[in-house]
Length: 143
Image 1 (cartoon, rainbow, N blue to C red):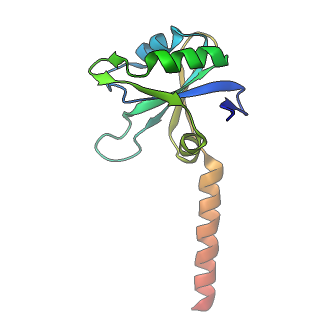
Image 2: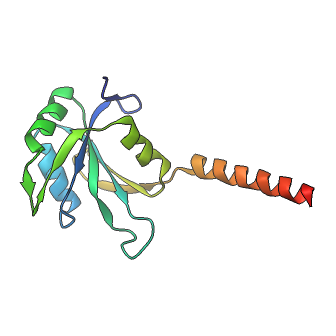
Image 3: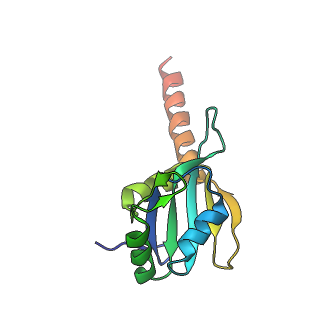
């Protein structure tokens, strides 16, 4: 099964069960031990009392398959903070979750600095708005 991301030409791994006290720089330092990190992506809570806080997992993109595989094998089961990491290949299902939810933070590591930018998936939101508007018009015509 090909784990290569078509859009970014990188190798993605999922790192789960992260200690929430870890800073983004800590995650970058941890991931960089195994090779050149292209980017780190994470999900941020969109509502509720923990709105704006990072969830306990992220995705790390490596430029080389060997580096991603080395990181996956070495970090899986490792205790960081008070948590045991769960590391595996990122799957299409996880990628879909990252794309369809808004508020994704992506840290571009190509220049060895963690620049944060919030990416919005306006095409999905726009499509949903169009569907709702069509349904409302159809309901108005019936009345």
